[in-house]
Image 1 (cartoon, one colour):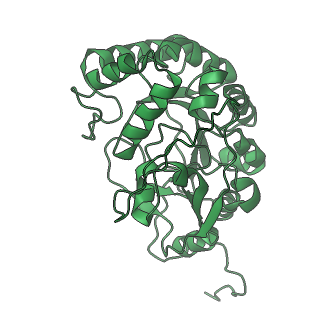
Image 2 (cartoon, rainbow, N blue to C red):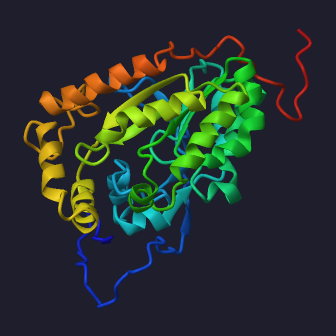
Length: 344
C-alpha cells in the first residue's frame, strides 16, 4: 500500500518501487506509534439522517485492522498523517476517556441517550488488548446504568462478554458486528489484520448465547466483488443467532478512492475495471456521492438490485426482528468517591 502525504501537507511523498517483491501473503508487521489524544471532550455528536444514533465515542483514531475500504482513512490528514499506512500505524488513543465520560455523566444537565462506541474506528482493534480503554468505558456505563452500543469487526469483543451481558440483562447494551465476506483469502487481503470471517461468526454466536442482542453489518458491499455473497453470508449470520442485518454500499471518499483502486488493480487486475464500472453505476457515474440518503445505499439499477436482494434474504432468514430498544430510565449518578450523601 502507498503512504502518500496528507492532502494538507506542503511536502508530498511519491511511492517508489525498490525492487522487493512480497511473496508472503502475511500482512506486513507495522511498527505502531501511539500518540496521546488530549481532546477535552469525549462525546461526539452528529445530525446525519443516514445513521441511527447521534452520540458516539471513539477511543482511538486510526486503526490497525488496515481495511482498504475504510471511510475513516481521510480523517488522518487533519493531523498531518497519510490516509494510507500512517492510518494503520500511527494511532491516537484517549487514556482519560473513562474519566472524561464520567465528568460528562455527572453534569447536572446531562440527559442519557444511547452512545455508540466505535462509530469511526474500531474500538476493539489489536491495541485495545493492552490499553483496555473500551473496557473502561463499558465499566463506566455499567456503573451509571447508561445505555451503550458497540460496533466492531473484531472477535476480541468476546473478552468483554461478562460486562456486556450484565448491561444487556438490563436492556442497556447491544452490538453490531461487521462481516464483509466469508472468503478467507479475500478477507485477508482486504482486511489484513482483522479477525477471520469464521471468528466473527463465532463472536456473534457467543454474544447471542450470553444474551447480548447482535446485529450484523455487511459493510461494505462491493459490487462485482462481494455482492454475490449476500445470500450465503446472511444465511450464516442467521445460523449464528443475529437478530437483524444491514449493509452499507462501498464508499470511496477523498483518499480512499485512490487507495482502493490501487489495491484493486493489484489484487484483482482482471476484474478491476468491471468492479469500478459497477461502483460508478451506483454513484451516478462518479466514484462517490456523499449526498445524504445516497451515500450508504447508492442509486440506480445496480444499487436497487442489491437492496432488493438484501431485503429478500433478510426476510427469508428471519433477520427482520425489530431493532432492540435500549433503556434510558435506569441512569443514575453514583456517589462520587470521597463525597458524602446529602442530609436532605
